[in-house]
Image (cartoon, rainbow, N blue to C red):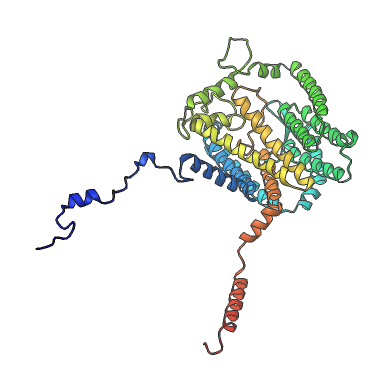
Length: 459
């Protein structure tokens, strides 16, 4: 009788049915996500990476250098675009104002590089000579026959030909250097806790400079000097009640100066103006046309060089109101880019002042940051109709060599302070390439070392 093996006659389907069941796959939507793969985790990783990049030792160095360079280059482009029609109306070459601004920018670049390489001790040594020279020049401005009046303000000295000098612009830098050195020396002697040492002689010297400026009628520059003084006192740790008292006194003086000047009263009445108003009312022509320029720019502007307001409708298109032409030609994107660059420069200056251990560096960096940011806020606020027109240029951006040169030196000052941070100094030292002969010497020594380490029978 023939035997049949158990299961030999079974069909494959029966064997499969009696065998082990296949594992069922979990649908993709129900699978648990791996850690670190979700959108929220990617956002956290990006944020941590951004924080690590932001906290690097050279962040302030690159922010100051990059934002200062970009503002200056963009300012040169807009000066050329905004000043062409004005130059042609005066019978000059279309690039006349651009050439002068480019020459000033070239000189300013040399000053910036020199200031960025100067040691802190040399900056402190320049404080007293700079202040003495500035006061001397500001006194010369008030002498008839030497000082020149422009737009009702006598703050200029003619250097011959088309070149003019405004000493009060250099006075901002001189006040910062001198005030920072004074406060640092008093801080080293533990004297800043006493009011008389905190205020004297810093406040009397600032009042002397303010008096010389107001003799020329330039209230906008006087406001910037006052902001610099407050910035130095704030960084030095002046108590809040002192600021309240000084601000109240300054507000009273400003109110008297505005009330006694019909021209300043008209500027105050033009805040928020959007139309020219009735005949015989305040003259808001410049403020209103600045708003027209910004409003016609839209999101991305009418195109570089395509401004309509610069054809005579907007006075001072290449100086005080160059931000309005920027908004008309580059649109909201262009104006926000300018604001972002100034914000980056201000943040970097505050970071340098907050991280240093040198008291002079802290006061000087705080003063320069206050100067540039306050002047930018006053200029842009006037163009937007939020503040009265003060007649101050946009730092590094508006036309004017007297304003550009000391501001670029101040940016170089911030770069030098950013380089002096211990971590930044170490990072820069590691990135400096070694000289050719030194690299060759190191390579030769390493080769000799490898030859000596070989076994005796190896060639």
